Image (tube, rainbow, N blue to C red):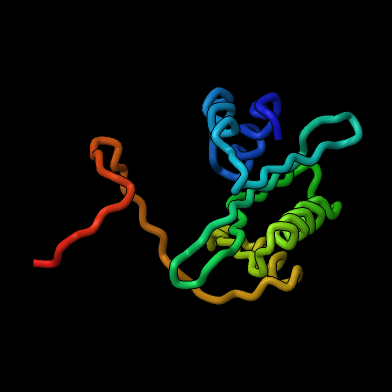
Length: 149
């Protein structure tokens, strides 16, 4: 994926319920590094119709894995095997970097996804709540040792 794909990626993310400004997406694309894979698929007219983002991560409790962070296929291009091909590319990339496990989280409201991933041999391993907090006013270090009182 290149910065030139930002407009199409912003539009695709909007289809999934994540409206974004093109400039913000372009800025995010710039930050993607070697630990990430970001692919865009295009139609015969070279128009982007889907994307997938995956990230290599080391989680202390479970070790290295690849997490699929986002997968979107345009509503005009679904049911053509595009998502399957994008997933296959992430699986190939994971193998090439020596990672054996891929995980993906899917919002409960994405009913089709809960049929799609099991059909791709992904097993549901847990249900969880996701919490979020805006910490933009807080500043702290990335790693530190805390002493229990």
